Length: 286
Ligand code: BEZ
Ligand code: FE
Image 1 (cartoon, rainbow, N blue to C red):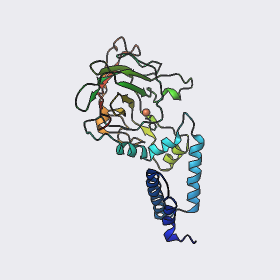
Image 2: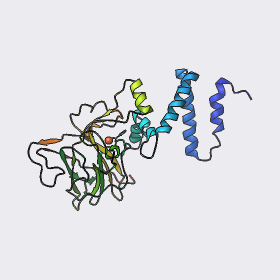
Image 3: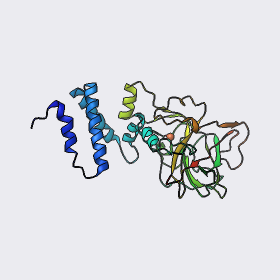
Image 4: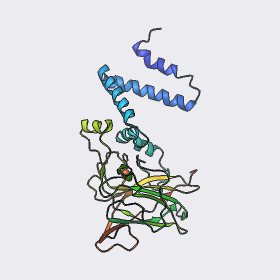
């Protein structure tokens, strides 16, 4: 049978019509429909199609256990944030989520409440404290709070040559829902640019920079896990995040203190910062 131009999309959709899983059938039907109309809309040439195939091959080639170029591609296309938005808590009182990013490491070291993220991440001490609550205002004791951040040079520990752990750890909110932790003031940084995604950004005259932030993953039984960041108010890249992750509700002032940091801070420093972040969790089933 001839695959006439007008009926090609219909024939491809028909080929997927017997897909047993209704969800997979729905996804493939929509994907094919949008892909075909995208190619027709831009009148994709064969050469452009080949460049795209080569780009995806390079994206796969550079991807390893520690480097996920496909996630980075999804991030710079705004797809990751679109998925975050679609799955966002319905309750507007809950803390907003943002991108997960590629630098989370499972099983970070435990920190005592009020303690310091272990390792030697260089930077000026930053004390973060707050209370974990539910959207109804009740406190959430024993919540697992996982934190990771770049140092003052904008580098994560996984990017250090010696691969030691620094700038990451986990702790638990206490019986009153409170927590506090010493970390270092993070810096803005560039997402990795030495792969195909970096070359794409450069071809499109786009900045690879992310504003300074600290990542949080907060989980507690009976609650939806929250993955988010806090961003530093006044950061030069706050309005041009390469991965579109900034939300006004997540921006915090880092209050400066021009005096020696209290004894349990990470570095014997003559200056320090502090900020507040109180995660509000949504119940799992709502
Ligand atoms: C991050 O914040 O760690 C990150 C997020 C998306 C892409 C690259 C880095
Ligand atoms: Fe980050």
